[in-house]
Image (tube, rainbow, N blue to C red; front, side, top):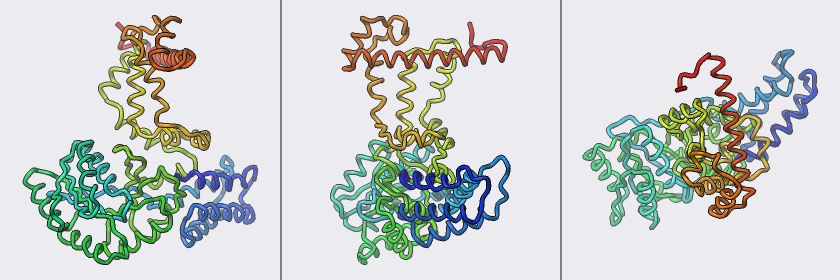
Length: 440
């Protein structure tokens, strides 16, 4: 997502590299390149022109500090404008009501059903009692798909396979939710085309009957400006509350994400990447602007880590590190926790400075699997006491994991380096405090 745009914007800022000050000429040249980059990313022309006009105006009106280079100043101005373009601040969904009803709408194939499952998982983690409702009465596999997703995330699914009246199903689901103490009802509706009048009347009737606390329009980000135009048409009929951008992990230029807020005047509330139920994020315009400009997104990275890492496990590990007892059991636990954070490629891009380094590198989500298999091929004693692993044991571990001895050596080397670093940090911490509270 946004890879080409990020590269083109960074190329534009290089035109100011080495310049001592901002002038009409060098700003005009850079802004022209920024506008070109936005248009190539499929950003709406009017939107691209407006934002670059503001960037130019702000840049020429700035007094450049001695410590700040012109390129850095223009990057900051562009970051602020991109953030404002995408909404400025994040907006979550309204889950007030008894029960709160969230209506999911969108085009065919936009990923509504998968998103409904992800949203259920997201809200369940906030201790909400969720009910998923299957109101797609046209796609044969839609009900089965929602039931499978419900099982994956541990959420009940209400369905009436024989009923072909979406309004009746939705109203019956609300009665079921009230009887069974469900606090949030997520209604997955059929995909439809904006030109299909009968289908549009149906979704309008469902919304009128339910009076949902939140209506979300799901958009496939890979459709570019078509997504923006479709969202505008749907909004005229449904007056939805927010947009969800799906498939941002695909081959998308990002124009929809940048344009949709300005054109439709409705906030982007969630973004979705990949098929995993954890692959859903609240949309933060300022963080997305930073990522587009290759500046990383540390806040989102920390939030993902907090969600993935078990607090009790973290405390246990901290004690072991302070006692210099970190072993392969702990190492394996950390690898498995990292996998819960989502796509490794996305995680790397959230680290400032790393996004440019890995822009042309494909990082598979299976990259950690060889390391796991090697550690899992060790005996319990070997994991607990790495010093036991001699050459003969390395050969046995390699054979058991289906890897080479060189692979095993590499994992052990990486583990030793990590343990030395932890030992060094622990020693420095003890010297600073004067004692180790975890020592025996």
